Image 1 (cartoon, rainbow, N blue to C red):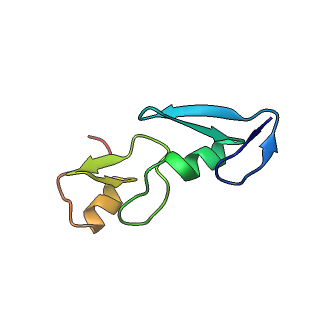
Image 2 (tube, rainbow, N blue to C red; image 1 turned 90 degrees about the horizontal axis):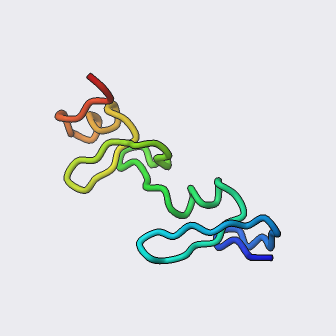
Image 3 (cartoon, rainbow, N blue to C red; image 1 turned 45 degrees about the vertical axis):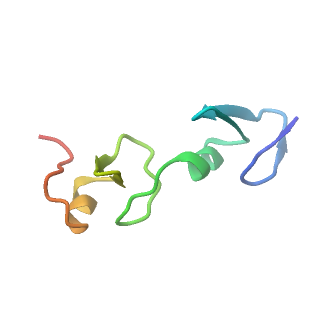
Length: 77
């Protein structure tokens, strides 16, 4: 069994994710998202989809980008 690096659970169905050459072990997608998903610069929510990026800053949606002063981004055309 393997221990989740977020919650410490020793779980027989743990899985590994390789990101930037480093191997991470998790017991759930929730823990993986908590550890690896970027956070929205405006509201702080974890971005599980594509999100929006502007000059190295990540936003969950066009609304949050606009609230942060970025007017050039939209959710879709």
